[in-house]
Amino acid sequence: FNEHAGGTSTEENGETDYSRFPSAERQKGFCVEYVKTMRRLESMKSDLTEPSEPSEEEDPVDAEAMELLEDVQKFILVNHLYWGLWAVNQAAEEGCEEFDYVNYATNRFKEFHAKKAEWGES
Image (cartoon, rainbow, N blue to C red; front, side, top):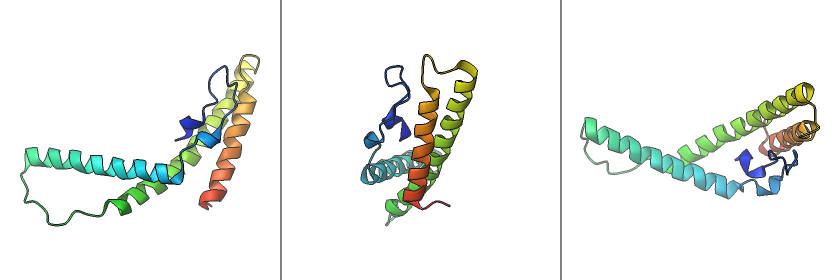
C-alpha cells in the first residue's frame, strides 16, 4: 500500500503524499478479496487432484482477512525502514543533486513512526 504515496519520481523529488494511502476500509476490502480469490484457486486446484464433497459451511473469510491485514501492516513498517535506509545509503553514495534521497528517507521514517503509533506496534 505504501506505493500509493509516491515520492519516487524525479518530479516528486522524495516528497511523499500519504493522504493517498488506502483507508483502513479499503485495505480490509483488498485483504477480503485476496483471501476469497486464494480460496477459489485452492479449491480449483484440489478439485483437479482430488474431488471433494461440497462443504455445508465455508470458513469465515473476515477472520483470515484480518489476520492477513495484521501481517500486511507489519510488512508496511518493515517496508518503510527498508526504503528509508536505502535512501540514506543512496544519499551517501550518489548525493542529492538529482534526487533528494534524504527527504525521501525522512518521509519514510516519519511515516514508519506514525503508522507504528497508529497500529500500536511495539
